[in-house]
Length: 342
Image (tube, rainbow, N blue to C red; front, top):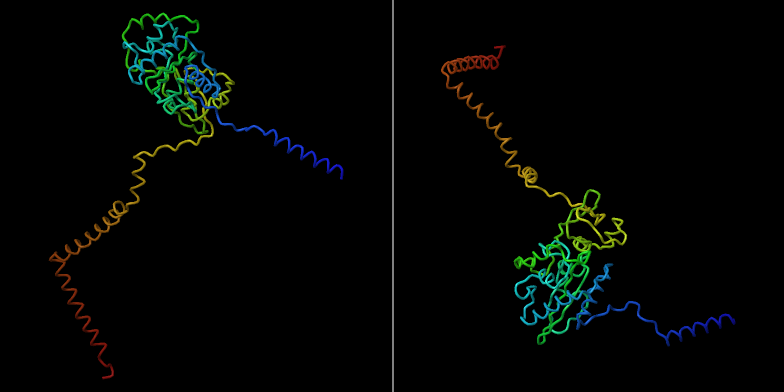
């Protein structure tokens, strides 16, 4: 009895303790940012990268300058644009500021930019809708990029945001072709845009007979861009290919991206559809085959009769046979009717 009373006292003590010290919520809502400074914008992008298992990007003063100048330019003109003042390209701006840009400079190099307009400070509650497509997500999540910069500018009640990302050369030195790019023309409108020329569109592969989907990596493609195109994750691709935590992939590499996919049925061509439809229309196939032999037979029989009756010799023979038959018939009738006793 004493043991039961002690147990009840312990339960009461525990309930009083929990009521005095309430537990914290386990499923807390994600933190929402109100982006008021470039540093907060960089923090939001890097948090996004970390959530996908990617290393955060390092802030670079030149990218901070390029992003801020673009935000100021958009605020001054009222246009949300990647176009730079003076008609220079984004690549030329980075090179002129001294950023050691990596990649093929004739194609723009490894750089990208996201821009947007907001009426009031931007509330970062997940990725803004305008940045959720592949190209804008690539700006923030590409493994090719190493550095980041951000800028915010205000004009009245309008706020303009810019995020610049890029990859520097491995040795930190300018490429030998940089002077040629700076002295050349302003480049094409595509090169002047913020989207990196190295984000190669993903062409989806189909499943093989075993339900496996393989993707051949193209130059400039990343694990992120491949994962989002196939509706999977970086972790899944790493596990399927025994990559561990390695994010490095190579041009021409065959990656297993999906398993257990139902192979799509081969398309039915028009050539195979025609024979399948024809037998369902018997009037156009079976009827002529049935009637033509019958008609030919009937026609031949009528012609033979007409030919026989139109021949004079055959007609005379027929008359003689009929006369003989008449006499024989009459004699038989008389013999049958006559009473043999009379």
